[in-house]
Length: 185
Image 1 (cartoon, rainbow, N blue to C red):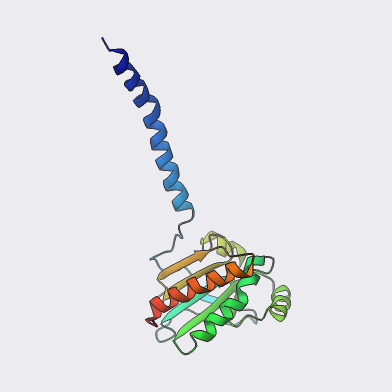
Image 2: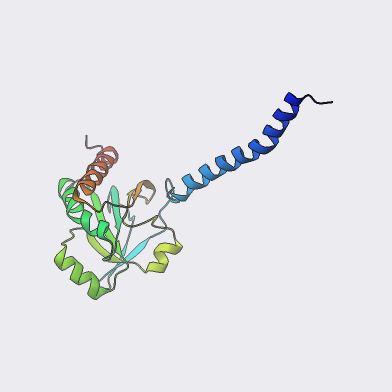
């Protein structure tokens, strides 16, 4: 026969342990929800198309040592807010064999109008929205991805800042990551 104390502990274990496991599983799911699926894997994009219709291959030998991809679109205030900071990063790393690529799903007319008002010095490419989502290239907008010369994702950052101070923090974060991978201390 069980004592009252034993019965209590049996009840606690029976009721609480399943909830603890569920909480742990929920925590793991939340972490994987924001985990970039291509981190330490090859980015599943080998060719891009400019807004002028020209195709360019990525990860060609001798093309670049690092690639910085920024996924953005015109109706995304944080995307637009970080453009000037991304331009600054490109200027700081000019001559370091890094290719800076901006990818948007905006149509040509919208893209042209936005670039006119928000000059963006990265190479500009179009990629269909369905391809972006199907291949899980973004975990939110904007998404910035750094790859090595073979296309292996070294770093990713999803989301942006709606204010200037937040965009500046993202600038410093991305700058530090690029310094680390470009050996530019």
